[in-house]
Length: 328
Image (cartoon, rainbow, N blue to C red; front, side, top):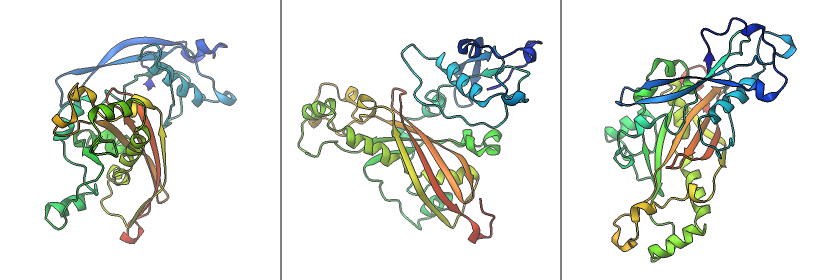
């Protein structure tokens, strides 16, 4: 979202319309093309401009925050097909809204935003997520001082985001730091190791494994989550770090959370499959705020078809003072 250059001369003199549909009205602008350094393809971005002046509380100089909060979601809804309805929206307000120019919205699909990064390597060809995602640990392992043990239950891969996170804009705004991880279930979801493929498929289709799958997504959401905060802030060392609360919100049940990749198996039997094929899911993590010896980690979990499967919100303790450094 940004102010629009070349706004109508009379925009600042407009009044807020009475009806909500007029208040939320949007003009579609020319699409923008964004290129990525690691891809030969450009991504088309749809753009919209607000047409009505927002309400200014107390006749002040700033717009009502709820205007841009609601209108940004409305603009995003213009980029998807009928039947896809808004589920939840989180806004980060960094500047007060002006009254003398319209807002311009450039909705970007969170699922396709990192396509150029995710498409470089297959998930299984990406490095395993380290047990401690901190440079001091990674270097110690490289030097042979410690050894990595296999992470049980899930195959978790860390996507290389260096080019994205080294951008000046990200360094100046730690809340824009992003880390993608991709994960899949290890082994069969059935308690009986002798269960046939047909039995497993029938049980999955009737939802018998759904709670197991939900817990697997929860399990993955916590891996290296707090280390993302220190990386985003450029902190290499700390004295204490601990999770305080972790909220996990599952938005979709049924097929969206199920983990067996039946398309890869086809009509064969598990006896002819060397490794039980599982779907790869994506976690997109970031930290919106760190202060007062606390840090917050948030993430979205996406199913392979782009469905927003779940959201996690984690509050943590992070202390630096015994290192002679100022607290957060």
